[in-house]
Each structure stands twice: as structure tokens, then as C-alpha cells.
Length: 237
Length: 330
Ligand SMILES: Nc1ncnc2c1ncn2[C@@H]1O[C@H](COP(=O)(O)OP(=O)(O)OP(=O)(O)O)[C@@H](O)[C@H]1O
Ligand SMILES: [Mg+2]
Image (cartoon, rainbow over all chains, first blue to last red; front, side, top):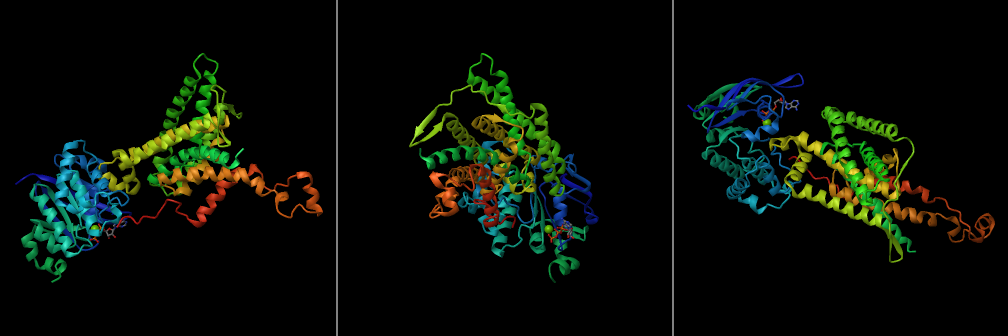
């Protein structure tokens, strides 16, 4: 088995006195694609935000050989950890090209950046067409493409995705997932948070189920898809 | 003399100084939504430092241009350090405090800086020694002085330079990204502390230049000069749309023009003796005899225009001339 790229031990997140994440532990191996599913308010976003150091948390987060649970957020992407936040978080007043440039902000290898831009334009041709457009005027699907493209410009090792299908039409969801599948196939490690459990489990090899701030089930996607509890709670059966 | 053209020239001169100062307010506001009320005092300290250095060197054998340059080269880094210190010591610890706390701190810093300047330079104005000739050129019935040309040219250069920095460079994109969403910018590897400090330092450098220019234009620097200048520049920033960089430039120039034109004409238009019919017979007739004037509001009402405009903007278009409300954060 490959070594864990990220390993989380007893992660806790509190908002004021309220615990949103109550000591979760999980790991994602290098090159793996893992999903985290759960109902609204289960604590999925809080977990990802804590990993990206946007929220204070307790517990340990190991990334490669390092502990990153006290690292300032801006020092994570140079180490290869990228988060596409819930609601996309594109810079609405910047152009598409400027948003993509921000994705590569921590890099200085001009040739590599140019090559990645070309690759991302190939993967997401809409972004090339809309290069000079102000990002706030893109459609929801285009904004999601931009958010993913921007994260890829950072050439991350680990990509954390928070509900990339949110608010998108089925055809657009399919496109977004296609891109995720492509970069994962190229070796990128992906941790995917999704409401759409069926899609997520079909895409990932294994998954965790989160309920009220705790991980209650961890298994392969095949088993999760067959699990009656999961089917009842998340697949609407 | 062509009053209209003359007032336009004067308005462009003060307006470009307002614009440069307004940029300091608007950049900081854009990034951390703080109105740095101490910015006017940074401008004042820039003028005081430069004038102190110039006054000290005035008797020396150095060429005048070198003396003025030495003043500027002392003022700019001094203000940059001051801007950095303000952010670091006064505002950063309050970054996550309720918004009223840094605002009140800013007012406090402004008072402290004023009194520090009072302690260091005393209560008397420092005069700008007449080192360099200030030639006057006639254009179309009006006059423009060398100092005015220099102020307008230097201001335009600085505005151009800042626009280039903010809209054309990697760091400028990072500033705008941070202004929009500091958390997401940090996910891109942007050190928000560094960007925020940079906006203070850049604003202070521009402010120092503005202070020197403003002081040279009126020939004096004084420890209270930052107050009204700061308020006017703040009005200019609001006029253009606070947080909006082109807005601060447009707002500053416009404010300077309105102020100059208003000051130039208010005496004429509020001279009751010139109102049709007013001077015929009766008490008013006596009062206006022999071409006398009965002026209600003279040019000493100069400072009113900036604040009148501020009130008008706040009532009619609170987001400012260029400040559109973009819908953000889907
Ligand atoms: N800023 C906040 N202040 C207080 N409580 C919060 C805050 N953000 C989230 N919470 C609470 O923490 C819990 C977990 O929220 P979180 O956003 O992590 O859920 P989620 O699993 O991502 O849900 P969803 O699928 O709806 O996005 C919820 O009960 C939520 O109300
Ligand atoms: Mg969520």
C-alpha cells in the first residue's frame, strides 16, 4: 500500500461553543481518489476548511512527512495542497485570465505556468474563450470550471474539492466530473466532498460517510453503494 | 484674466493632490474595509519631514534641486515606515475585532500623530524656503506656475505608476484578489499580512509625495494641515466610490475642480448688489451705491464645497461615481 499523503487524527472544529466536527480520523493515500459524503450540516465543509487552515481546529493533520495543523493557509499551496471551496470562491471582479494567474501565484517557473495554462485551456476550452471576461459574469457552470482550473494552475499534489456539482445542470456536472477523472488519472490525489453521493461513489474508489460531525462508515465505494443504510440515507431509496 | 481657465488650472493642481491622497484611503479600505483616518496625518508628517530637511539644508552650498530631492528622499521612506508601523502596531491586532474598534483607533492615531508633530516641530508653520525659481507661464489669459506644472505632472505619473502596479503586475492581481476575498487569496498562496502591509506602505509613500507637493504649493507646512486635507481626500475617495482606485483619481480631480470653480465664482454669484433689481432704490440701493459689493459668501467658504459634495454623493449615489455594486461570492 502506498503511504498516506494526508492523515487526519481526531480533528475537531468548534464554532463558538458548538462542535461541528467531533474528532474525525481518516487518511488518503497518494494517487487515491476518496470521497466524503454526508447530509447537510454533517461537517464536511468544516473538515475541508480545517485541513486548508481556514478554520482553527484541534487534532493532528499530517501531510507527507509534515504536520500542517499549525501552518498558515498561504503556506499550504506551495506544499501542494489546494482547496476548491464550497461556492467556488472565484474572484468575481478579476478576469478569467487573472483568476487563473492567481492559481499559479506561488509558482515562479514561467515556462511551466504557460504549459499548464495551455493544458487547462485544452481541458476546459470555455476558459480560453472567456479569458478576458470578468469572472463574476460567467455562468455558474463556467465559474465552477474556473475554480477547478484555477486550483489546477497551482499544480497541486492533493486536491480538496467541496461540492463541485452544487447548482449545476446534469450535463455540466458530467463535464466537471470528467475533468476530475482526467486529473486523477494523471496521478493527482483527490478528496471529494459531495452531496450527490451516487456520482461521488461511482467516481471514487472508497468513501467516508459523515454524520453530525463524526465519520460513521468507511468502506470501498462498491460496498457503500450496496450498504442499505447508505442507500436509505443518501441514495434516496 | 480668464477666471474660468485660471480656476480650472488651480483646481487641477489641488485636485491631483487630493487624488493622490485619496488613493491611500481607498487602497486600504479596499483591502480591509478600514477608513484609516490617520492617513491625513501621514501626509502632514511627509510635508513636515521634507520641509525640516529642506530648511536645514537651505543655507548649505548644495544646489537647490538636490536640497528639494533630499527632502523628498527623507519624507517618503519616513512615511512608508510610519504607514507600516501604523498597520503593524495599531490595526493588525484589531484585524478580527468589531469594526468600530479599528475605526476609533484610527481616529486616536490621527490625534497622536498630530501631537507628536506639535512636539517635534512646534506650533508655528514651517515655511518653504524660496530655493527654486517658480516661473509663471501664460496660457490663454491664465497663468500656470512651474510648481503647478510639477504637481500635476508628478501626480499623473504616480497615478499611472500605481495603476500599472495594481492592474498589470502579479502583485497587483494579488492585491485585488485579497481585496475581494482574503481567505480564497490565502488558498492561492497570498500572504494577506504582507498584502495589507503593502497597501499601507504604498499609500503612505503616495501620501508623503502629496504632502510635499501640497506644502510647496501653499508655501508652508503645519502640524494641523493633515486634518482638512485628509477629510477632503477622503471625500474624494467616497465621491469616486471608496475602494475603487480609478474612482479615487476621478474623485480627487473632480473635487479639486469643483472647489476651485466654486471658490472662484461664489463671491460673484452671492453678491446681492449684482442680482437684477436688487440695487435699485431703498436700503439695498444705498448699500450698493458706487459699485459696492454685498457678498453673502466669499472665497473663505472654500472648504465648504468638498463637504457639500460629500453630502450630495452620500444622498444621491452612496456607492460613489465609479463604485458599482458587483454581486460577488455566488
Ligand atoms: N460560521 C459558522 N458559525 C456557526 N456554525 C457554523 C458555521 N459554519 C458552519 N456551522 C455549523 O457547523 C455545522 C457543519 O457545517 P458544514 O458547513 O461543515 O456542513 P456540511 O457538511 O458542509 O453541509 P452542506 O452539505 O450543507 O454543505 C452545521 O451545523 C453548521 O450550521
Ligand atoms: Mg458544505
